[in-house]
Amino acid sequence: ISEWLGNGKTHGYRPFKSARAWCRKMKFKNVSEFRHFCKELDKPRDIPVAPNTVYKNAGWTSWGDFLGNKIVNICFSII
Image 1 (cartoon, rainbow, N blue to C red):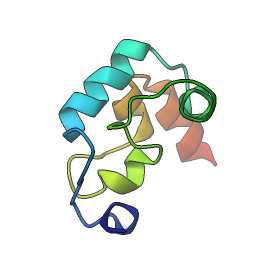
Image 2: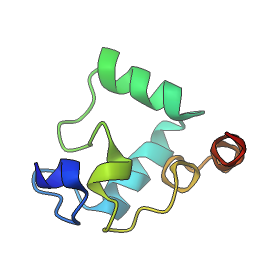
Image 3: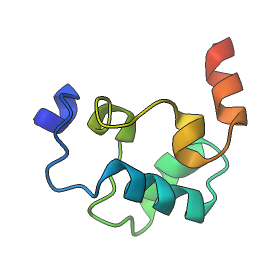
Image 4: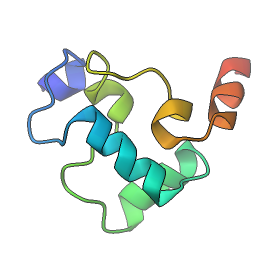
């Protein structure tokens, strides 16, 4: 539950910087592609499906930063 509450505790997940590096290495084009991968493919257990919640107080700034795709920021800022 602490992960869901976004209180900075990331029990069972790798540290934020390590998770971000993994996502950037995977080269996801957008949030939808990341979520599809999490749902349909073999995502590592220590990568959260909702990193924006898990890492809220542990380094999270935006999906664009996490995925390494700054265009994601533009899409979400317009909506």
